[in-house]
Amino acid sequence: MTEITRKIRWGILATGGIAATFTEALLTLPDDAEVVAVGSRDAGSAKAFADRFGIPRAYGSWAELAADDEVDVVYVATPHSAHREAAGLCLEAGRAVLCEKALTLNSREARELVTLAEERGLFLMEAMWTYCNPLVRHLLHLVAEGAIGEVRHVSAHFGFHGEFPPEHRMRNPALGGGALLDLGVYPVSFAQLLLGEPDAVEAWATLTPERVDAATGIVLGWNNGAMATLSCGFTADTGAPATISGTKGRIEIPDGFFYATRMVLHRRDEAPQTIEFADVHPADPDGTSMRHEAREVMRALRAGETQSPLVPLAGSLAVMRTLDAVRERIGVRYPGVD
Image (tube, rainbow, N blue to C red):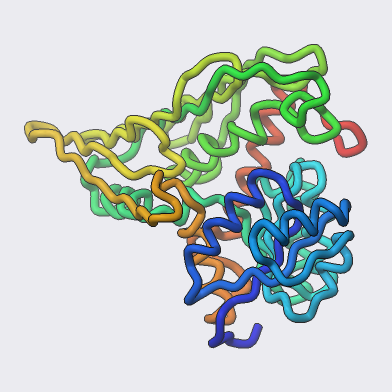
């Protein structure tokens, strides 16, 4: 890719809640980013979204957005079930892509997208914002320095109580429904960020009448003796805590580990140390924005890179293989894909 020195021009593919949140984040970066187009299969939805955010061009199809030569990168914000089609369409048209997590429904589809991006020499990244979070980057630095010794255990959970009708994307198998791809991708990705791809995968789940997982428990094992205990679900309000335990101490993230702003370092014979980082913006006061991943995409595009060193494609593929293994253990299948 050629180096870009001007503002990065974004296209937004889909108009749901996550697309709105990401667009709001981009609008807090006016010196770096410009949202120039939005595309939806519903022309009215695209126009309403464009009007809401002051976007100059609205398209009533994904293909029209992908064909827009004034778009540098497309953010794909569809349900999981459409990631392969939407991201592939954009890559085929020559657009760089930031695709929401989980990257696809399974590892085969993910490999197809990665191969397509490599063949086209185009940037592709999974929108795993946790990997771009400054506090998480500092956590990795502490671990690499040996602050807690050798990591032996990772615990991470993401759950809430929610009632969803059968047709809702959280329960609809045709939309990649269930807790695993929507919520579980975060604890799995967090564990693999610290320990790499596991050597063993075990899982148990409570399934909905539609046979997608409402709650899933996961145990990952590594041949060096390390392990991870993870969970996800929409049956209980577990919050989103995480703990990384090593031979000399541990690091605790009390809640919201995937958008962490505070962690506590516990070292043997030392007082606990609280470390905080909050990137608060007036337009986004809760500090949970997607600005960090957007900045990383734009940095990579300006540098002419085809993938991010913070969110490497090999890592996304490894996570998808683990998610495939979990689904095999719990008996969740997606129609027309598995």
